[in-house]
Image (cartoon, rainbow, N blue to C red; front, side, top):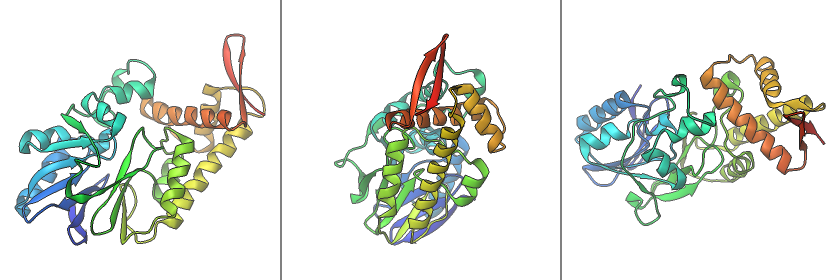
Length: 292
């Protein structure tokens, strides 16, 4: 773990729970694409950089999930590097409490205020086409999180962040976190049509051909949508929909899974309502979801 892998030319990635991209800007200077999950990840990355004699100039975050920006603060304090993050995700990077608060829908309980959902604050700047280092191309990849992006380097290596999951991850967790289902499907269709020398997803193996994996993720979204529609043949409370999905997929309920899967299911309900397949009914002080 935390092994440096050369993808092509000046483009690398660090094998870790969520892959960290690395692009050489010169013989000595590098930028990272994401920073790992926490201070310990930051230490491991710093050690690797020191072994290579490289100086960290910038971290380009793909999005503001804590497993991708948790190493920001340590690395920034140690190296003085710039941190660049896209759109709304920049605000969350500056104010990480927004992530668990958004997921919970209120002030998050103690069980949600931990490093997996709550990174340390870091001084981030808004990512733009003008300040992205190394001549990289910013690729908008919305859907999984607010303004998530990927990056294409001059070596034609594309870092895809969390826009898709491996077959193994889908089989284990079944319901992957999605903020905007419509945007997520559009992103997957865009990725499916992409060409590159190498694709580096954060949670799947690097590959030269991303099409089959993108389609697998599309199919999983449609499968889950179909299950929700089946459950809503009769008007149903959100909590009962969530319960049935946990039972169907043999998932274990705790606070973390409640907010991650629960938020995702709410996103599915919004998408299905907006696409005319579900209606929302207010009855006797309850919000019920019903298949049209």
